Length: 329
Image (tube, rainbow, N blue to C red; front, side, top):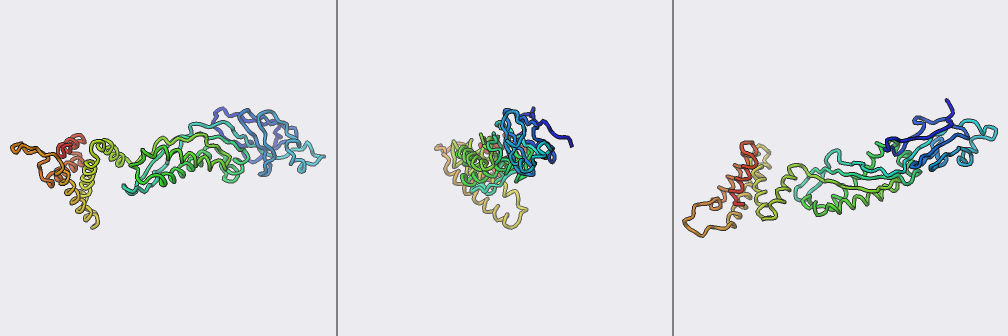
């Protein structure tokens, strides 16, 4: 094997956090070999898994002055003989725009919606501040040498901390808009503190979105549009919608049938109370309106309209118009 008299590393992509040279095993050097370190790099020379010395930017001549441990390895008569080593080049730049996200939905126990699967994503910025610590923990202990492996490890770390803070801060995702900033800031602080033990600085972390399943998001959107007018009215409407779903699924077990029956009864009671609370026309000879219908009729028509919509017989717009007409929204 040829002796490596000169060693340096350029990263034209600007995306490599750490790289080993030679890439496989180790290479043969000799005292007097040249090592060139770029301005944005730190180089650490290893032999047999042991750190010999760390070099900052500049041209360095390897000798027993900067590699003192070699003095006992290479005797005086063999001062110019080759020795086997390898070098890690570590980038000191700040890596920005690193995306993170949940590969699969994470389960969240919601106090109102029971178990909900959430997705989240965002970005972060990292910088290696302690090269020796970084090499001894992330690279040496965990065996993560490629940039991709390191990024994946940090992403899993972020998601883990985010899950903890969601459980600590939220009872229901309906309160998410209120606590969004608190969750993001606490996750950022927790990740930053824990990554420092690996020689990595979390420069920045953003939580761009935490999203529930589409069906839950749809209900939340409905709530935000109607709650401003009448929160109690929306609750009644939502309950009737849910009872309609249960009533159309009689094929379940015995428990499902009981639940559907109870739910339908509750829907009727709520619809009746809602109808009673609507203003009545004082004129005795006024034509009958939707609000003058018995509660059972209103509930039945709502359920029928919802069933038509679910079967694709009417559009969502037609369903909403029908529902507004029946409830006089």
